[in-house]
Image (tube, rainbow, N blue to C red):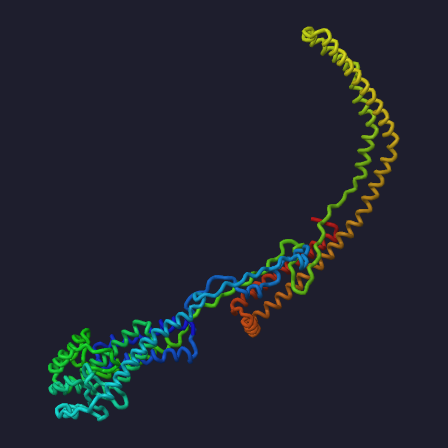
Length: 576
């Protein structure tokens, strides 16, 4: 018994009580006894409500949708083709970060308010039930202290009114107004003031004996018990008040058939000033709020049919509405797992998806560009450049004349002669000396460079045979590389063939799994396995997964075909 149980009892009792009140209102043109019967059926269904909810199988109804969330079943059913093989270094266990577990917070009453709700409910139940038990105890005490009526007028009226003779007529000094109670041995109690008015005997005894004949007191106690059990529901209290009112009106109608209605209405008016206590008994004394309604019902001369077909229909409807409501259990809609994504076909031959049980194929080497034979072009270029190197160097050095540099410097000095006249003799002499020293150093460096160039020319002529030999070695190496390239391409083609075979095997396995998902018995077994793991999977989701796997298998076969075509091109020596 948790909070959800009390919530279900609340709305179920409200619906049952509301349905009974509505059906009684529909029968407002019928006899009060018919309305009282429908209301009693509603009270009986309220008493049976907890037993039906606990003992009978529940009728689950999805009342609200589940929040959108990824289902764990999607991860379990997702095809392996979604996984990509990404090689990389693996960390040792010692380097993995340790998971830190946070200590759970101390539980509070708001984490599970069931004890608090149960305590409040039991408190209200004890208050209402205690009031009922106190009233029963008081009735028993009044009856124990009461004495038999000896007044001849009351006894004569009692003999005229009673039917089966089960009821007893007694007088009690502590009684506020006449009442009746009891089931197996019912008792009619009157107070001494009422005993002193024998002219009211026929009206009072006709009313109370009508209660005894109709078994109104057991129905009243059952209604009070239902109100105690569902004390938190105002519709149940309204139902209890209406049952009491309809019982009194039905007894009034029975009494008015034996007593003149105007006289009986006068009796009700005389008892309207009595304010009785909340005693669980049937009493003629009307409440102020119900006095006018009861008098209008007595003085109404219209014929109100009793026990008609409409009454029977209302009784059947009351039971037919209450039983399903008692068995209904509002539940949250099952959270649908996300449909497994369809595997994607590989975009390029090297990207091979993993398939369970098939090792990932080695990545095919990138096609190498064919190395052309350039030996003829190299020989031609060397034959043209090597002989001209000394000439090119000599021409460059010949263009540099030391004497021309000296003349250019002398001419520059003459241009700045006016500026130099402004200097002192010592400064002009020092400038000339520095310039001549710079010219001498330039001439020495130029002559040294010319000597180095001539030596380089001689070295180039001496190394010419070696350069020719290096060219021939390069040509032989280029021819030796071509078989190695061809072998590498053949090896890559074999790897791509192996990868294509792996993709074919993976596609075959995915098609087999898709075929199994299309088998209803296999789906039911898979749903049972997932349910045992705490997951929810439906037939529709498994069929969608089968379609995705079929599409993924087709994509993998297409990728295998493209890889085989690329392998054929590599074996043929083409890299287009």
